[in-house]
Image 1 (spheres, one colour):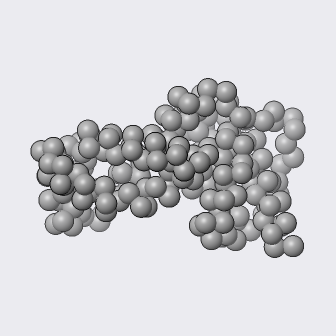
Image 2: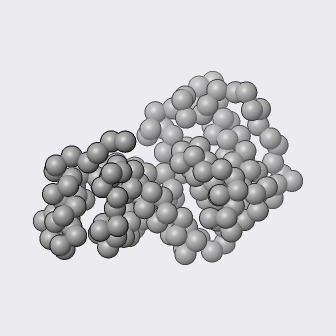
Image 3: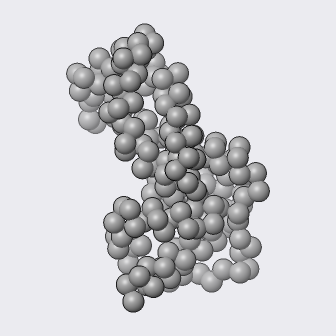
Length: 181
């Protein structure tokens, strides 16, 4: 397992003590990457900034719980994803889930959508997805959660999670085909 470097160790110690300069440095070090993650979950840049800010508040509040044998970036990323889920639950009470009877399952053997696109293109297409489909796609395809875990986190059925993922994948393939075609 990868150990944290000396700079990160000093930043963590400073953050535990509530040192604003350490918090600022930690933020500067990880915010750009974490913003991209937040943007993939939010429907707009303002939502992504809200998630990022709330996430870093949680990071600073809980940094003393970080296991120094772990990878700091991965720990922060997990907090950002969980904050995005919390944000989604709080502000998107009417989840934009589609009825599973309206969804045609996509072919399982086709090339991965993510391997066809650059990051900016993928974010652009992800932001076009209905919110429920986008959330499930991110949790499944990007974060690696299974449908049972997603269903539990989002308070939906496992079938809804699967259908939303397939809907997202189908829409992304259509949009990619339109761009490539």
